[in-house]
Image (cartoon, rainbow, N blue to C red; front, side):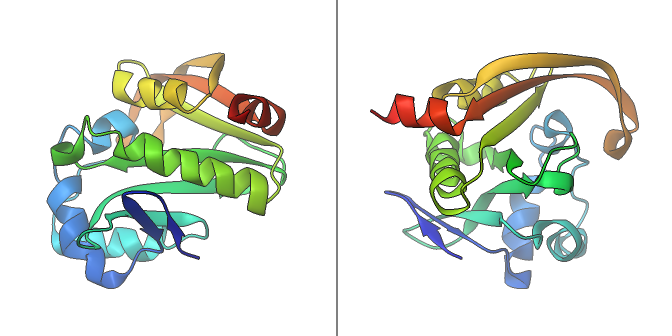
Length: 181
């Protein structure tokens, strides 16, 4: 499945994206605040594409102008999510490379994933989380219509071997429809 927006192409990750992924995912301002370790090599990024990013409903965020992967957006439907959801709900995850911050690209990608989730997949509820201090991620959620639901304090985060506070927000199909009018 390929999705498009005004400026972006959202497409499945490919092995050939490993160099581009590494270029952005090696930056310490990206992964750790999002809950995953920085990438250590192109080969490491290739493994992440194979083992993580090739999951269903996971998309490379690419600029239409050159097709290069600059970030990621995806849905973790039902039990694919780490917050334990039923099959008619999903969690959204996203990030974009530092050179593309502040251009509204991730809100644009997330809005398209929301549309796809509610219109095409007919999901009922979308969830999204951000770790304490990740104000950029919080702002994306606010811009896309998510509202605060609850906070998980002192949550063990295995990928980073630490303890975190995660804020969870939610958007229902009904709220999205109302906001679209």
